[in-house]
Amino acid sequence: MANQPRYRRVVLKLSGEALAGERGFGIDPEVVSSLALQVAEVMAAGVEVGVVVGGGNFWRGTDAKASDMDRAQADYMGMLATVINALALQDALEHHGVPCRVQTAIEMRTVAEPYIRRRAIRHMEKGRVVVFAAGTGNPYFSTDTAAALRAAEIEAEVMLKATREAGVFDADPRTHPQAQKFDRIGYLEVLQRGLAVMDTTATSLCMDNAIPIVVFNVEVPGNILKAVLGEPIGTVVGGEGEA
Figure 1: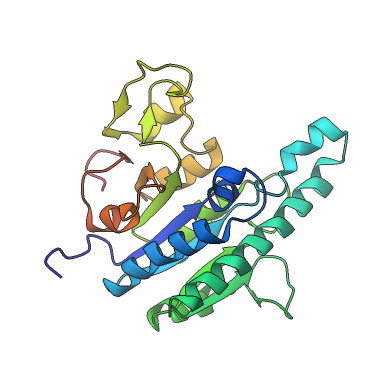
Figure 2: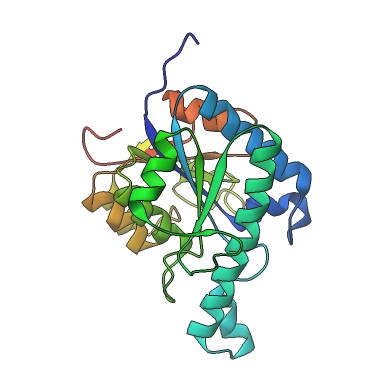
């Protein structure tokens, strides 16, 4: 292909809501198939891909506040929701001819492998997508933090944060039509301004390990590949000289 990928190994963070599409709940097979096709394009470019999926289309641990449920118990439920999404994505990837393995932070050997760092890296080196499910395996940590942790562990060169927005804005563009999008912003500024990129733990992990974050709209077909190629889409979050 004419353009060479900017990154050799990436972690793609997908929210559960991204898999639900316009339904807002559950899994939309057409949306999952479209996402899988985008990942297939990235694999075809010779890039190693790890994916971390959320579970918000079924359940969030923070939903416990509304139901007066124990937070840790609710978080474990959210982790199980991510496994459902991971299996759906695995099926869609395989339908597109992309070898895929699901690894979970909570052992459930009948449906997925346990997360083992070296095995995950080996899968990726062999041209398989690895979908990381069940977050970090611990309550009180988001799947954004899990994505940052996995990116550091497998020595990914970038975190691709797939959202439903065009990038990072100085205000919520849904409620502030005049909000300005950043083309580039530093980790510290994101933290100081409290911008909704990822939670503070995830952002700090990326900062400490010099992992740039590319935030972009995944609903535009081809954007994952464009992000991998280093094309100017969305917002790049990183320190001076990063990304």
